[in-house]
Image (cartoon, rainbow, N blue to C red; front, side, top):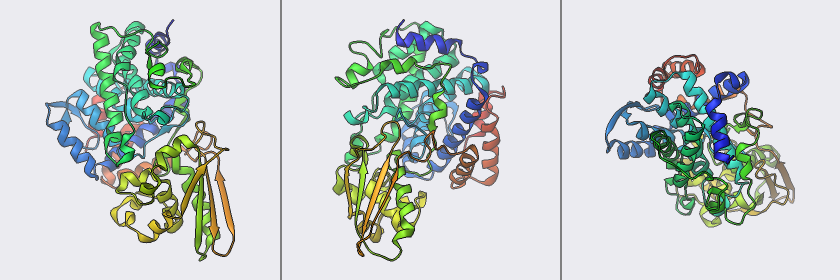
Length: 453
């Protein structure tokens, strides 16, 4: 039996009773984090640009998270993906190096509203979408970034196809076909790193739209390749040619291991690869006192290093807030100078802080032979002071990782902070109640309405 058929068999048979209660509880909190971020994103220019681009097409009747607009099912999924992922503050499955909710939730939501499904069907489809996205990402063994693919776009498309197909009631064969079809749509380039372009923000929404499209084609009888993962020209042999990959990870542990529980919620609004460095800098900061810093050395695995450290000249002085999110030198310097890293540290004034930029220029980067990547995103910071002291701190496992997870209460607190930047307290409570009630059997359309702007 092919890998896609094995996934289809499990997903077709899965019911809410198959999912442990702790997984459902955590799933609701991951959705809460995503919806709060969607609201916060509406304050930024990229949200308005994405809305303008999509409303140029036909309007529809699908609500959009955090906005008053109504779009077609696929366009709503695109915009919802942009809003969830646009600030790069959304959850990440660490071994998969994939933002799993940003594609799975928009696909499941559009599919559920379109079908007139219940929140039980919505929640189950979302969980299955996360499980597939995570496993497809794990199969890449950390290699997608190294060759220039964004795994959220690649793996997320498969998860979105299964989520949408589950809501549509596809059987095992057609769920396998949906995966086969979406394989031809799964891509997302990391070239945005060269000039700070906005394309990465679009990736999970495009993956969600691709999943919806593939599921619809499969439902209508369209065929896709059976060996979309393991075949000669399947996902891993094309995207990761000649590399050590683990295609069997796509089917490992179904029904026993719930990858959703290994999904990390971000404590900082920056690339997950830098979180350990921000924490390390904040640990060392009190020991520095008023002493001048002569040099900062950071050790990182070379694969994430390509994302957050190259080209180093550009990372020393980010061009905009999105550039800053992917700059290890800027984040470390900001944490040391300001004693924090919040959304405020991405405002224009903070990006032009000359003290921060001068300190960022003192950051040197080397390969980290002790890194836990891709199992965890390690960070080592060494600070040489003018008085001759050398301070060192290593965060081997980043905070938010499944070994050091944020609690559900901490996620609720983060939600209140993020949604509070763009909505009233009354709206926040309405959304909180709707999300934490997911799975109660009410119409998914009611949930979508509650989460509108």
